[in-house]
Image 1 (tube, rainbow over the protein chains, first blue to last red):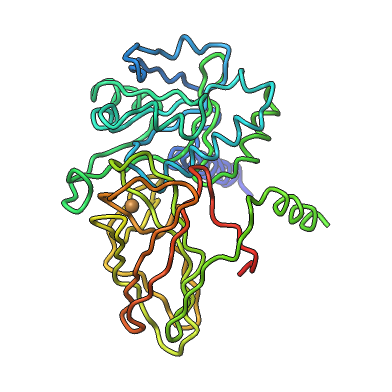
Image 2: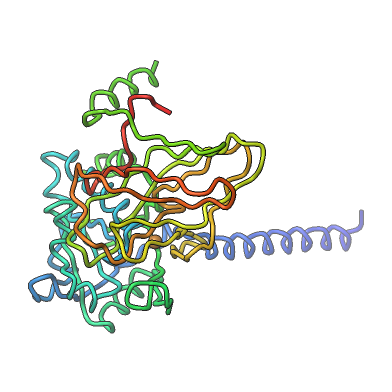
Length: 196
Length: 156
Ligand SMILES: [Cu+2]
């Protein structure tokens, strides 16, 4: 084999490796969990009493964050029930975990009653409902999606679609991971216990 | 062995297991109907149950009605590309020989316009309309906010 041929083969190998690397990066971007790229979600949203709560006040605690709406009878109760079970089962460690329910339908949820909804699942769950703009900003910083869909058949003529996962934020404010919709409470509990 | 232990744990945790309602008309059997306690009447309630089709022909659940809600509807929760939505469905197909569940995260009855609060432990009737089998009326048990389904003695 001439030197020239060896060079061509080597360059071909480099090209294949590069393509493979690019492919992997694109795939990683498509794939939902952004596990290793840590970022720090932020929010400033009113609680049920109208006080603005920000992410900074929860430093030192793990946050379990769910975006939903209280008019949601199927997906939201399922996830909040899992969260409630996790909080019960954490026992003495429960104080180190703060569950948050962030309303993506804040105006209606404030009218319907935010606290009565969250406490029906667990007293530790803190409900937050900001303005539409604050909610949009919070969702963007968590890199999640929600949308209002007009639907004449739905209550008040609209329904919400949203990312139904549960997000775990660490004590320093770093995004750690998401638990996809339907993750059993026992799995979430085991994950948290391994960190506490 | 693990399964056995789990089974005992589940049995131990079962809140007062009871024989769940089951009603059959023709080849269609409706069983384990349940709902979740409501907070007042302003938010929609939910209806879950299991439908078994032992008949030779496909059937479909086409409508649901109940005195508990002004506008009950059939919905399906769909999670696609990581986004959950809850479109209205015209019918729930129940193919011959199959069992179809209305369950959390899937098909469900959406009870809009509750006529009264759904209280834990209470029951209310629903009438299901099937394309072929016709109407089936069954009492629905209202379970706790955190319930994941009824615990039935018959284990069907
Ligand atoms: Cu629905």
